[in-house]
Image (cartoon, rainbow, N blue to C red; front, side, top):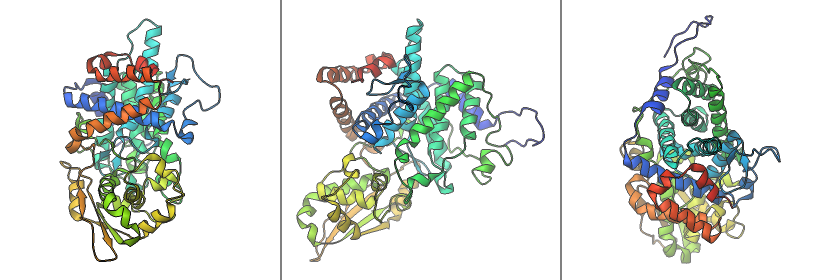
Amino acid sequence: MHSHELRSDERPVADQLLVDIANYVVDYYLSSSEAFETSRYVLLDAIACALMALRFPECAKLAGPIIPGATMAGGARVIGTHYELDPAQAAFAIGTQIHWLEFNDVFIGTEAVHPSDNLGAMLAVADWRSRKAQREGGKPTTIRELLTATIKAHEIHGCLAMENDFGRLGLDHSILARVASAAAATALLGGSKEDIVAAVSNAWVDGGTLRTFRHAPNSGPRKGWAAGDACRRAVIHALAALDGEPGSPTALSAPTWGVSDALLAGRGLELARSFGSHVVENVVLRLANPGEVHGQTAVECAIALHAEVVGRVDRIARIVIETQQAALREIDRAGTLAAPADRDHSLQFMVAVSLLTGRLSSTDYEGQDALAPRIDELRAKMEVRENPAFTRDYLDPDKRAIGNAVQVFFDDGTATARISIDCPLGHRERRVEGLPRLLEKFERAVAGHLPRRRSKRVLDLVNDVMQFENTAVHEVIDLLAP
């Protein structure tokens, strides 16, 4: 960290982390075929989430311009719509779509973060740049270039999450989407290392959004658009840097005013590893069930028990859920759970619905009038406890397991088997098993949004990997418009 005289107006050398991020984004050669393959799946998954989210009115109303009629001919197109917006507002809309259903990817660091949140900024910038290049006789941006930017945004996002726990300080993890997206978006727009340092420094200077909106009694729809807001700010900083905005070289280390002192109680930001392609290769794709990631395996366990339990629900005496410490902190939630934002972050709610119905979908969080009394009855019978082995494997950087176990006990003294699952479908350990579900998720989202012939064109394109990666971004986005 730098030491700089507060009264001096001499321009200091930039903080090393800012320089390291810029060097990585511009200079690092990505040689990992696994990284590109996984990034392609991440992109398809994010598009699926975006299309499915448009079925929900509260999300769809955020997909357009912030002021009615404030569209931009030749701007960036919002996925699955006819809206063309300025790239910053498009980044907000797309980022909101991707995260809205709590169904996009996750990376496990000191807290769970969502690197595909960055795709709101990446898609908006890539689409706008591609259209602009086509109009001006230049080379449109390809999907391969978008994947490169996505891998690098994922890496910055996830590496910063490994050792730096913003949540424990009351700060929202969307700060990492803002920082990572600012870096990758600036590079995607052709910015220099100096531009990237400026954009990233300004992303840090924005400070940390409070986590207030993620927790009762203040939880609400902002949880769905927080990622979009981070993407919008990132694009604003990228465009400003390209226009000459200098940023703050010691945004991290400046005494009193920098991130370390002002946000992190004097601690410097730490990196557990150098930047490469680790994060995208180890991302968890949420494929089976929407909802907070720490409860994914619990839902799988509950679904496995559904057939045995559904005919004896009235005889249930108690339900024991074993989980990790992180889940106890994040999703062990009782109370009324009045908002969807509370339900999809309640381990008890997720397990209750899964036991009763044998499945879990996004609509289950919107309202359960018929099932509500039975859900509440089951929640009241649940004992949630830590399993130290689950916590240990969750914190192990070589495993990053997200284990849960569920067992149901009846009033006659009998019990189901104890079902235990260490890693959810979509985890790297179960990637091969999960890929058919990912493609099914994508196909279902596309088929539910587009006419049959157009849907087939999209599926044929993405199944031809070489052609897909060489296709201009704006051409793919146009195919997704209704």
